[in-house]
Image: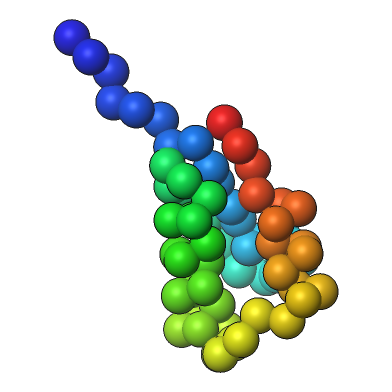
Length: 64
């Protein structure tokens, strides 16, 4: 019996210093970034992610 594929990428807001319990996983970095952008917009009222924050996000993404 085949095991479910484990998500290849993960991110947690707390890993970039946010007081937030959000975590996300995805099979591709592009899919993960879409989830992160949506969360940033809806939960943190960030219409655009600035370069410094984006650098923190990319550094905090874990690859399985």
